[in-house]
Image (cartoon, rainbow, N blue to C red; front, side, top):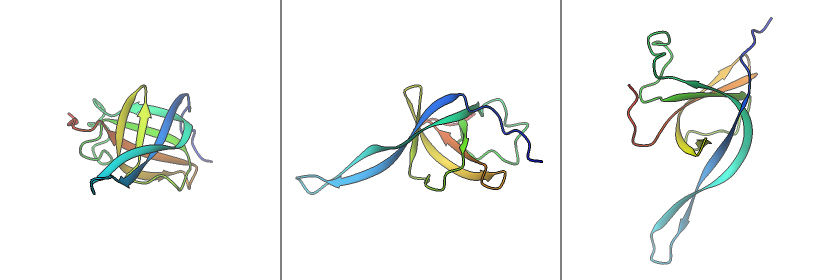
Length: 110
């Protein structure tokens, strides 16, 4: 029997990085909506002692969503107006859920 992996009660956006050439020959980075999904949101700060073997350096928050195989490390998550850079992806429960560990850009996890 597979354990309950938690409630998916928060709405998040998964955005894909897109680059385009500028008129001056440079490159402009922007993001486009990949998917809007329901997620379980777990703050990582304060939990490192319990999850020392699992937490990645620089992770602020963990999002758990239904399994998707199209999320990439270059994507970002938008939650409550904050943009989080994806740091680590992990399968949970034989492709039942996807764990996305992320951090705020420029922020150091404590």
